[in-house]
Image (tube, rainbow, N blue to C red; front, side, top):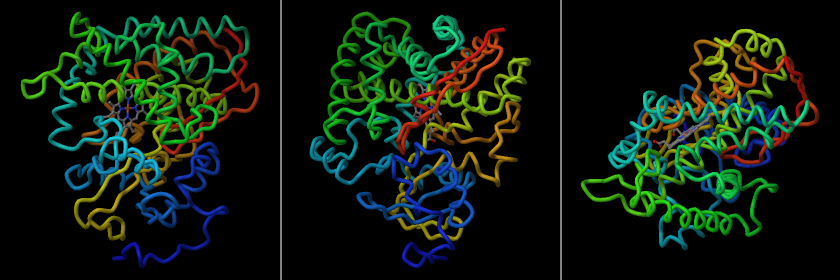
Length: 426
Ligand code: HEM
């Protein structure tokens, strides 16, 4: 068994070395996947000591990601849920009076607290409720979005014109945020998630950025909570605002954490998967035609799009005891970075992982994570993507690139930020 200090350097690292913390790496899909392929082959559980960050193990194989997530009592979320620069963590600690998290949400919690908090909204995200309360409006939103796109003529930037707005509208409908507040929410969710990208960030430096964004959210959602306590409706904000924990009304901070995770986690992730799935279909015209001509493939195609894009690049876990993983000795207190995009191209788990197949089955991707923290909104996200693709592919005859696509530079939530296309109707 090798400890971090005795791991020998593996043979011939790829040009430019390996640093999975660099946001720019995630804006270059070819380099990203070449890096991950090399890591899976030669150093699948790799000790990393990047400048500015606390060291951690980078986990790149699907089986290892699942092995860690399955043992949620041994590998915790709370100490370090997401990769952050040490200087940012220090600024946040100074601001919060000691906590490393600006907002505490489900992803920062462990059992038994996590189960209690998740239990408040679990039922809301089950199929029967989504079908009744969400699907009719969602389908209308999908139709409106495609109408808008087609009204632009035979060309558009699919990200800017369709993909960022549609999931935002759906998640705001789910929460109960009125349409006129959507531009503010868009800016906030993008800054919170993609804030290492120069095009979308505020100009305050990273820690200042985050704090300003979170304060904006806090103000907004406090007013929403008060409103839903006075006048409950059938939206998710009413469920959250009126939730009780151990018989007591949910606190402002906890409610705020909930709104934040739903608003942010439910937006950029789904837009990235929707746009990235379309990009994959543009690159694989045979697969596009198969899907266009056989809409019954839609559920499989949506899962394949999520595997292909994997917009959530990582979450972290912290070991509570020594543990052996694929020949490496993880020490109690060590952090692990679970690299989902790598796990979803793992040659040991997927046949031809670098081929986009609209009918891939089985498709054991971990794009939504695994275990007790499995994405709360995974059924909603898939319902959204299915509705939009159904609407789109029932009207499009062909689609092709109309310029260079571009990706967000972020090691947390990423995906396309530009997808210029042209298309013809049936
Ligand atoms: C958690 C991915 C859409 C809400 C997560 C996790 C991933 C993920 C990887 C972490 C799971 C883990 O630690 O094992 C995605 C992707 C989406 C998507 C790829 C779109 C394609 C949504 C939507 C919502 C949502 C629409 C709306 C409510 C959440 C919440 C959590 C979460 C609340 C925290 C769950 C917990 O810690 O218990 N998601 N997500 N996500 N997601 Fe999603």
